[in-house]
Length: 125
Image (cartoon, rainbow, N blue to C red; front, side):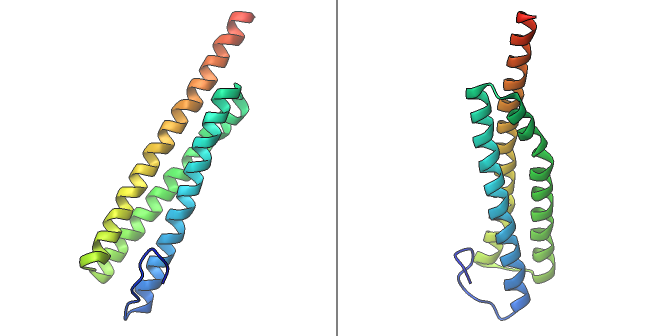
């Protein structure tokens, strides 16, 4: 197994489920990182189009959170893990919540960028 869970289990299906969850949490993390970076770039360069793109990514972040959380709950229900495996799955659920919170802050930055630039256009026009 990888760094997500280093000890292989007797049930290969359990390891497979953990691996899929790992891949999704990494993808979600990359998406949120890109969203925050784009929001900051949009703000510093007054790029309204980029800010709008940041807002459009929100649905995908929310979808990742829902899917990952549901898969963790499903794995807990099906395999009834204990110890570090249960801790891992609960931690993943917490991490998805934190990533969604960071994405919400990126959205806020993008929204501010859009509103500030609309006011600038309104003042000039």
